[in-house]
Image (tube, rainbow, N blue to C red; front, top):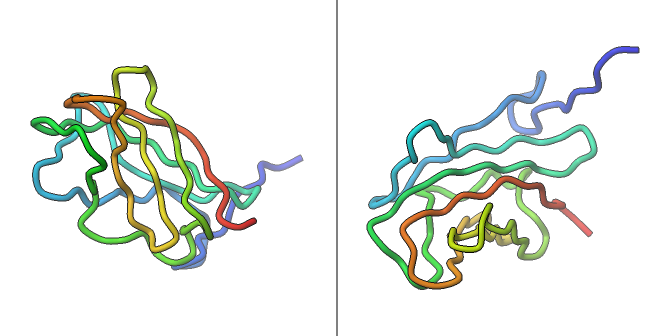
Amino acid sequence: MGKTIAVDPVNGGAETWHDISLAAGWSLLSGESAKYRLLPDGNVQMVCGLSHASFSAATTITNTALPAAYRPTSKQFIPGSVITQAGISIDSAGVIQAIPSGATTTCRANGTYQRDF
């Protein structure tokens, strides 16, 4: 039995990882990335390992919103990898924000969210 793959809803063809364009002040942690992809079950997987000088409130991490095909119908949250690192939220407009649990300089998250309910 063959491997099930998702079809890229924007460009057609097999789905691959898409890089997230970072807003000013954000950079990748060493050896990390910031990207997303559609999974065969229709959910979106997002991974990020980012650094910022310091933030203690929700802070937008992207220059541009996610394409409509990757946006959830309501705000979704992917928790940080550890308690001291910010998680991320993705809203229905495709805006991705780092959500800290206190003052921090890192946002590291890996998870999936549903596009629609």
